[in-house]
Structures are given as structure tokens and as C-alpha cells.
Image (tube, rainbow, N blue to C red; front, side, top):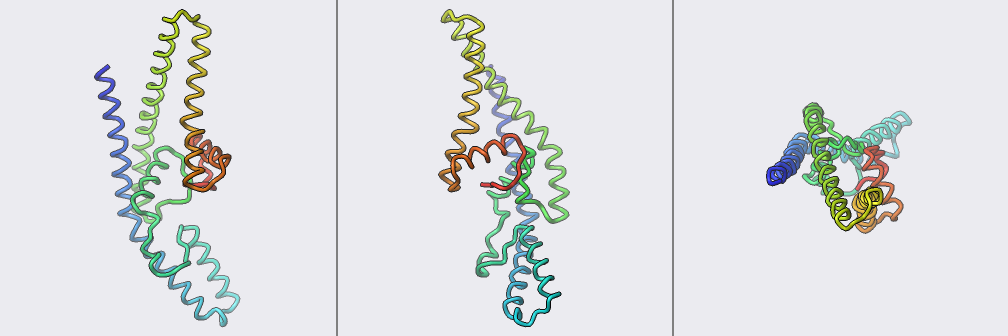
Length: 217
């Protein structure tokens, strides 16, 4: 039992250290390139504002194309120059991205654009996805052990096996729905300003690793 707890602790620590290291590397590889994109987008915006009355149709179409590409890359040329310093690749976002990679959710709202970031992402996922599977397997094993203890307790109380199986399954499902759907949805409703149904939708899309990306925290 002690060895099992130690293994679980080491796995949890290793899992989060892996995510933290990945987040730090993604931030280092992507943040500078993103800043350059923001500067270029700001310059494009200023040039448009100064010359928009004299632009030809072709120049306007090129501006719209550049604007669309900037937005697709997560750069929004609005506001003042101080917003250039605000990065999508700060440590919290980088950590979030690392989690979406190893869990195979892949919302698509944040992705590496540099060659170095893309290559690192391949190797990070290559080792991170199996690690995530092992981590989730351990979580499932712990929940299964909890159900077994509940079943043993009910059996000692004289309850029949069929009823015990039904109650342990019900406990397992109820706990999963509460912990992974109901409570997170309430949290998302409070922090993100979504409706509760939107929170449920986001939680399910995330848990199922579908990850459309239409809702992202």
C-alpha cells in the first residue's frame, strides 16, 4: 500500500513537472515571435488609418487578408501599443496549452507558429500523451479502489451482492458526473460569465477530448 501511494505521488509530481517544463519551453519559443507579429499588425493598422481614404480596391483586399491572417494567429490589432506586451504565451496560457496537447483536446485557439515550437510540440506530445494515459489510468484505479472499499463496507453490513454492484456503479457514475461535469460547470459559470448549460457543454466537450474551440476558458 505504501509503495502504491509512493508511485502515485511520483506519477502526479512527474506529470505536473512535465507540463511545467513544457509550458516554459513553449513560452520561450513562441513569445518573441508573437511579439513581432503584434508589432507588424500594429504597424499595418497605423498605415491603414493614415491612408485609408486613398487605398485602392486591391490594397484594401490585401489589408483584409493580412488582418484575417493576424486574427487567425491570435493577434488582434486593436487598442494601444501597451497591448503588444500582453502575450497569449504567458506562463499560464503556455501551461494550459501544454495540458491540451498531452490530453489530445486541441482547442485550436492557441498553437505554435515557429518551426522550433512546432517541432518541440511533436516530441512533447509523443512522450506526453502516453504519460497522460498512465496518469488517467492511475486516477481510474484509485476511483475503482474507492468503489471496492464501498462494496466491502456494504457487504459487511449484510447487503446482497447484486444490490452492492448496483449501488457501487451508481456511486461511481454520480461521483464522476458531480466532480467532472456539475461542479466545473458551476465554476465556469462564475469565472467565465457563461450560462450553466454552456458550462456543461464546455465540460463535456473537454472531457470527451472533442475540443471544438468555440468555448475556451
